[in-house]
Image (cartoon, rainbow, N blue to C red):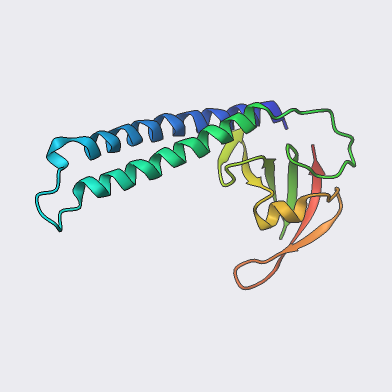
Length: 159
């Protein structure tokens, strides 16, 4: 699987998300500072609510920017076939007869990308699965809590 294509797809998603979030933050800031948002009574919280929203959106914009920088800085070096899993690895796990591809990224886990018709789930070392994968090698089996029942995964490939 092409790690560069995965990184590029993630960067494209993050850039689109950053543009949307930046626009939303600007709109909220404009609303918070609009004279029509001035409180008309002691219980009127429109301006203050818009200001809180703008602050939260600005914070999220910063987090997305940091994630973009982390993905752009990812350096992929050639990996040996039995090398331990680390950030930047593409890992294929098998569970209950089904294979799933994961990309262990530096930030913003939970994104889904599709590369050459193959869905890839982005995870990070902050997730339980990501932490469990660090240092593993092909052939290892790990157990992850599932919906009430632990799920066993076998590492079938690491790129």
